[in-house]
Amino acid sequence: MSEPSDLERLLSRARDAAVEYLGSIGERGIGARTGRDGAGREAALPEEGVGGAAAFEELLARAEARAVASTGPRYFHYVVGGATPEALAADWFTSALDQVASSAAGSPLAVDLEVLCARWLCELFELPADELTGVFVTGATAANTVGLGAARQRVLARVGHDAAERGLAGAPEVRVLTGGFVHASVVKACAVLGLGRASIERFAADNRGTLDEAALARRLEGLGGAPVILVGTAGEVNSGRSDPLDRLAELAARHGAWLHVDAAFGAFARVTPRASDLVRGIERADSIAADAHKWLNVPYDCGFALLRDRDAAARTFRLSAPYLPPAVAGEPRDLVPANLSPESSRRARALPVFATLLARGRAGIRAMVERHLDLAALLADEVRAAEDLELVDDPVLNVVPFRFAPEGVRRRDLDELNERLGRAVLEDGRVAVGLTRHRSVVCLRPAIANWRTGEDDVRLVVEVVRELGARLLG
Image (cartoon, rainbow, N blue to C red; front, top):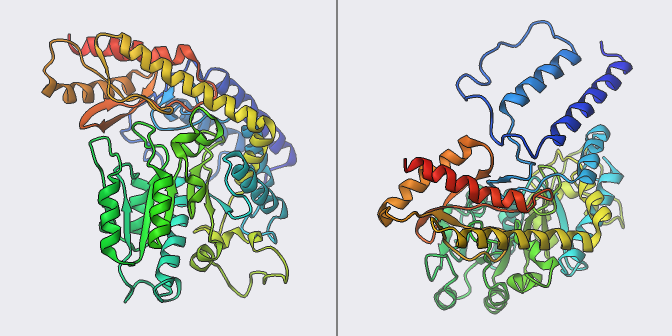
């Protein structure tokens, strides 16, 4: 049996290991240091345990070999923030408290802070806090599921069908109309909710994915009041661009559609006058999905959904059982967040968000976002100045798509060359940059969202790409 002293020793060891790891995060190789073959299958479950200290040392050894330094300043692969000191400390304490955050009966602390942080986020983004209800979830995929689940309930209720009670059998078809920026998480949410991937109709005017507003308007006219969900994107993953949300809001109001905005990281454009016009109109959305573990820099996993029609979500996700506490007369309905999302077992995700927003304030978050915008502009300038690199799209937020395009290589061969280069960059491990296809070409798409990232880290991206690209050419 473990003793109280074992807990103190283990926590002290964990602290020391974490401080050592984070202290070297800027110089560490990004990727796993060992191959995948056999990983996770090399040992049988022991009959007798080895004890907490030995088990933790084994975990440390495996982390040294297999962990990815995704919280470091040179990780640009996915749109990932690093955990700020205040967020990490709060997250550690969250694990120690181990709250049941499904309702105020389980944890008044967790739910109080969830309600408060949802309001603070609305204030940060200049959204109508009195009209929106927030719920914390694992990330943007779950947040999109919450928003689209509420949308499905509401647009079908308008034609007399209760999807939460009756399912989709016999229901009119729900159309999901969007531009070319739509993210895979929205597609997944449509599949999970029974709307179907095939229900999504994309209206793109060019190979950037720019919304074809005229074609969308004609389609809405042709549907003649059928159940429709419009999906706008704030911060497309390849370029940072956004749909014209203000005009989507006008179309939604005119045709009785629900407007959902996937704003996984683009919502943070609202915090600075330098970028807020890019997402003008988001305040008119019926639902918004976003991530805190991206630009807010809290630890994984933490996303949130903001809902104008709270009842539509509650009808979809409500949870009731004899052993659960009944609603208290006069008690705010927000005190049962499990009724607003797919999760009943919920971690107290609002605690690191609370610590971050309180520590940094509006000005601190704005300063971080603006610094990342400056770093994206610097990276774009470095790419333009390199004769063997090509900027694929001008950055508008924090994503800079570019490719290796040296003289003498045929244009038709550049996709294959950049695919090889992308693999080489990840294997090299000095920086982590992902590949994508944007504007019909394969390119790299570094995304800058980590509070630790500085100018030298950004310049290293260009240095590594040019070095490894030249090596591939022999």
